[in-house]
Amino acid sequence: MANIHPTAIIEPGAKLADSVTVGPYCVVGPHVELDDDVQLVSHVVIAGVTKVGARTRIFPFASIGGEPQDKKFRGEVSSLIIGSDNVIREHVTFNTGTEGGGLVTRVGDRGLFMAGCHIAHDCVVGDDVIIANHGTVAGHVVIGDFAFLGGLAAVHQFCRIGQHAFVGGLSGVERDVIPYGMAVGDRARLVGLNLRGLQRRDFAKENIQALRSAYRMMFAPEGTLAERVDDVAKHFGQFGPVEEVVNFIRADSSRAICQPEAGDA
Image (cartoon, rainbow, N blue to C red; front, side, top):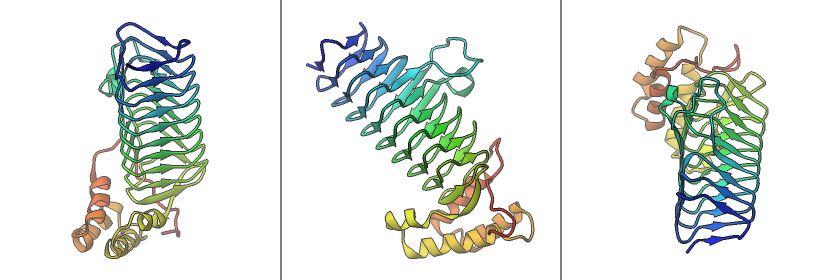
């Protein structure tokens, strides 16, 4: 049977696995589902139609599954799905989805969401993502696996952050950041590739070299971006990571691609 502190409130209808731990002064709503070994440390509020995956730990004063901060929201039933093995630290907020975004917000597995960060409505967050303290992600954002957002970074709605990308602290992201890219600045610009992250994750040297060569070609001053992307696909498309970057740029998006400042590439 779940280990529930006597001061916690578990509303009728909530589904808790037998190995769940609910600490002091937590509130769990009637449409919440907590999988095996989920731990709510204390003072956690989980509301809405929210599912939390196995072994996820949630720290004090987090507010999970609250209504979207969107004036178009009219009370429609929407949900939040959180994967397994996440660490969600103090004062973090995750919101459910809206009708305009498919009615669901999704967070993957093994993420680390540090104190005060925010995931808004209809976001799709991949696996192994790290968002440092007070990072803010607006609605409808897509974040790829292994992406990292530094402290106080802010991502504009509908942006995409590619897998293995790095966004520096205090950066304001208004455009899509390519996979493996590194973006910094108060209005973020691309400053290169996340080479340290690739090395830490044991990417093959030939793939890293292909990415470096493709990056230089893709952001050279000659021609249009579309033309340069075609050249990259022709010369380096046989390398999986380069193909991912090419497909990311070619995909439909409401946001432009974050690029280096003139002369930086």
